[in-house]
Image (tube, rainbow, N blue to C red; front, top):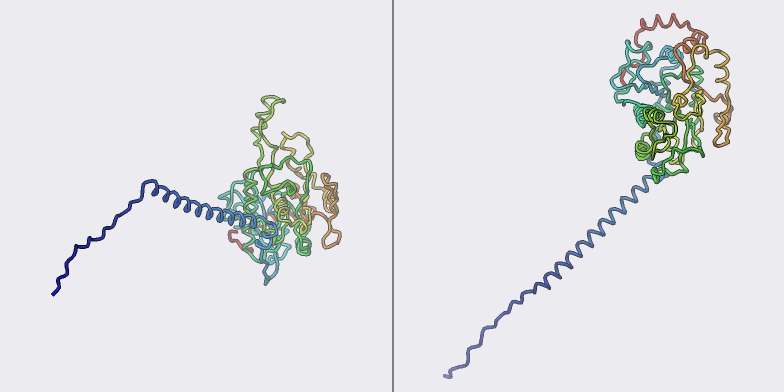
Amino acid sequence: MATMTGKKRPMPTTTLLLPSSSTSAQRRFWNGLKIFSVLTVLICIIAFTQMSQWSSTFDPKTRRSFYYNPVVITGTPKIAFLFLARMDIPLDFLWHVFFQNGDVDKFSIYVHSAPGFFLDESTTRSHYFYGRQLKESVQVMWGEASMIKAEKLLIKAALEDHLNQRFVLLSDSCIPLYNFTYIYNYMMSSPKSFVDSFFDAKDERYNPEMYPVISKDKWRKGSQWKTLTRKHAAAVIFDSAIFHVFEEQCKCLPEDDYEKVENEGKNQTMPDRRPDCIPDEHYVQTLFSTYELENELERRTLTYTCWNQTKDKKNKQGWHPFMFEFSDANPEQMRKIKVANHVYYQTEFRIEWCQNNSTNVPCFLFARKFSKGAAMRLMNDGFVGPYDAKQILSSWRKQPQTHQGRVA
């Protein structure tokens, strides 16, 4: 038997080649670079998406289709009377007669007063104002964005009632120039809002820091007192971006600073200070201009105001309207206000003829500022109805509450 002999075959050996330190570092570098590149691309995509969304949001045409969705109302359309008051309604006795001669199904009342103030039997002579103050209010300072905040709160509260189709902003010193029926038909017959709005080429209040949210060519000025359709009221509430710019860039120099400049000498000036900017004279007008809604406006106010004529920029009394006292509220003066049929805008060399659906109409439905004495004279003269003021005032507190008294 043959015997197989031979050398023992060696076992195979495996040599483990460890990567050198330089090779490992290169691999980590390239992996890190890949991760960094991926993250960079993702960040760019997210940033581009956000910018696109922001750009789309600021496009007035996009906003127009977004902020308003009209619905068919079932019921009688109403006018929302929005009173911007310091505390109470000083001329409530005159408004009482106005609302008493109206249809309670055609109006609603909202009052913005100082925080904590309540309208009841102890603070108003008219039950129409019982409990009509807003639940939410702010402390309003003249020449500050808080005035716009108060307007927004009034409009927001009124929009909760879907029957409110017109929104008229009034001060606590406003009076109606006509009876309720005439004013209701006047407003409801027009599909447009009444907003005093014009371009002032000499205006220095625009701040370049407002760009790009607000461009210079969209900057407008006008009266604070306006009447809005429901669509335009919704636009005011929808906006936050333009309002934020006004909070930051449209401010008025406090009166104390004017006195400081005056005391330090006539030749002293305030360094690095822009001209005073009154937010409530620009906000809604600029908002509608930016949204390209001006063709949907009657570019005039329905509230008559007689302004003090002064060229002294440091005299803020010249920035406020003339107050009508007892002797000023005479029949001839009131007739002149009521027959006004056009408004001339000197900065635009434009005459705004007062029309409603191509029909010539009086320009004004309301007027301000009127004292209690002036309002009492109008009552006695039968301006808002054939009533004796003393008799009405003595009988009001005996009347039961007949109008809704919930808090707005």
